[in-house]
Image (tube, rainbow, N blue to C red; front, top):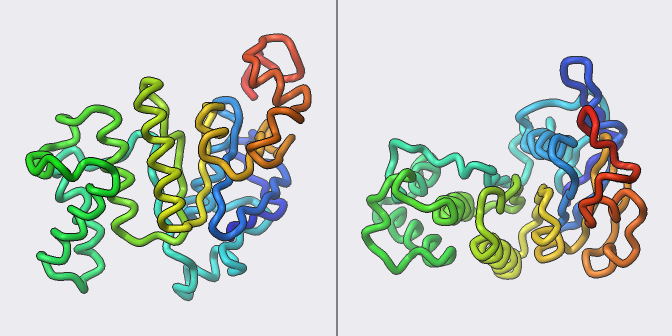
Length: 251
């Protein structure tokens, strides 16, 4: 379970998050939907512990984030970055194997088997030549899938996704969405995903929270939220310039 309780965060005097509160139940997928620049990725950095909130609390499985880090009681977290964030000087194999080697308790044969297993899970295991390729030799969709395989190899209990379909064509975006669903069904992990892509949100979420001006303005189950959308979410869904969402000077 991921819980944010009255989290505030400012950057260079600008309020990014204001008393932000929401809960992701264990084994569920929560999608933060909202316009670009509204603070979605900031939430992920906070949950990963890369930055600290000005006030409020973040708990994972009931343990405050700082306490979990200090006592190693926190669950294993993995993040799939918007840009995939693969090491461009390493092969596909080495990108996935790197984290496994850091564990220090696996033989090279075990690492090789695990790399192959995770590539199979993301639909890239059929081509042995892929293992020696660098990220520059892969398509955008393949890089995203390798990034997911790298995350899965570390057995995360919580997975964070930062705009997983950005830069992909509709068919490849659909493939990534389907992959995220299959990962969730197979592993029953707790997932927090941020996106401005409505199709992604509707396809993968159990629950959606619409983030605007630092707060969740509307939320509900993905299957019914569009039907109950208020003025903010309706404007966003319709892509209209006129409405309560400002199009001048950011979000």
